[in-house]
Length: 115
Image: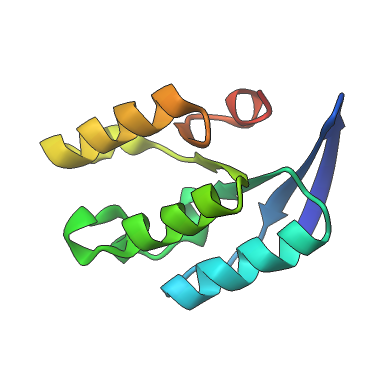
């Protein structure tokens, strides 16, 4: 895993770069969050391929647990990927609601993630 730091006015963003799954469990998500939180990042950018497919199955509860921790610590998270392939209505609704709040965003590219 490698971090690329983006510095915007009043915001320090960590873009996670890796060829491997970074978040395979809820614990992995919390470890990443805490590591970057204590490095004083304001936002984390992950790619869909960094997260186990189980996360994207809302019935597993994994997304809810991990994203609640991000909300508790007020850490913004942007996940970059192709989310059109997820046709489940509850997941589509979840994406739309998440993107409205601005705390957790599911986006198509790095430009949208750097907002």
